Image (cartoon, rainbow, N blue to C red; front, side, top):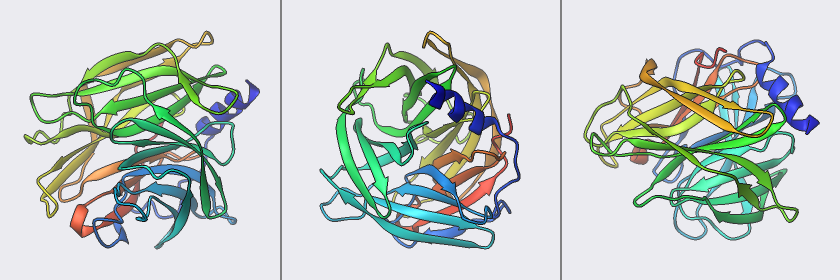
Length: 301
């Protein structure tokens, strides 16, 4: 399990903020098929001045783009397609790198199907796929995160919730992999979560999750009034997660989440804490308006 220890150390390394953390939104998609539904850090650019990130798109029809690569630098964002090789998912909503397994990722659909991917160059090959455990009635997922602590691995994901009558349900479980590659989840715990902002009738209380090196849970929340908006969203400090040396996963959510930033007119669906930095890369899926990204210093330990 040395790879998990190394992965955890990487997440806690001090470092400079990536270029582009200037507090401005930059457009990376021009229509409803090219918004940002989830983000996964791949690595830094050759000179260290930017980052490469995988982007999932929530497209549903055969042949539509499922995955792209974003290169984010100061004053510049470049996005290019990644070919999907294998059974096509419907409605991809989140993606995360698997700690200690270079080039491997887990991507999640809205209905809870997890795809294990191997990304080489501009191709993502499906290694395996299977459903999440403990899917509840009406669950609609937009978030997924992997946490490496004490030589163990855990997964967090959430039903997004819907307004005052349905808070988000945050799920957590230990995670291992079968010899043939399938993800295997341990005992699942659940916690209810209500966003402090926005508070519209259609609020999605959790639209994405990221976790800092010290275990802080950073979530986005979003309100969506339709394909043309208006939209509203926020990023909040939701609580803390721990993974013991025995593999037990503990989640403590804040009674009153701290709102780190509010973003009227944007629908944030991607939050990714960047290793070696205090910054989170934020991505939006603004439906007919396309997708935007920006970096903000929300991931300080």
